[in-house]
Amino acid sequence: HVQLVESGGGLVQPGGSLRLSCGAPEIILSLDAVGWYRQALGKQREVVAEITSGGTTNYADSVKGRFTISTDNAKSAMYLEMNSLKPEDTAVYYCNIEGLTTAWERFRAWGQGTQVTVSS
Image (cartoon, rainbow, N blue to C red; front, side, top):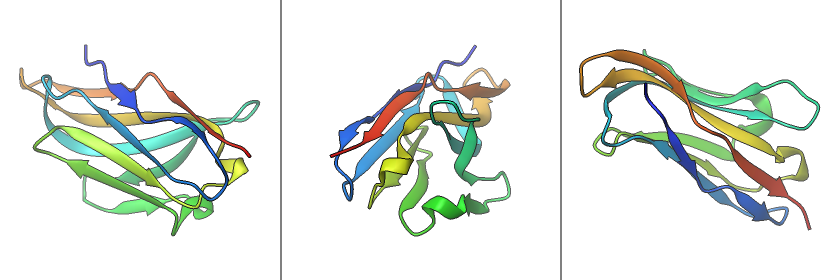
């Protein structure tokens, strides 16, 4: 059972930046596909950004040009750089990783969620 650890959320003013991190460095051997999702109060969870197993990067239209998803395979971690944040970006952000553990087992796991609040 892979437990991902997320960090980096918080309160930021409109126009500000945050960087979210997610990983499990002692458990994950490789990252095959990764994604960041968010769920605002009263709304369904939506995909924000993803890197597919084929290496394609996709972003939701609402975050294109402002958010950047990346991975560090050496650290078995993934990141979401968020710039020019808007109040409508306020949500709980979840990471999702599909990959291989150090025990050579395939997995798909979610992070515990981290709150991002954009407000003045």
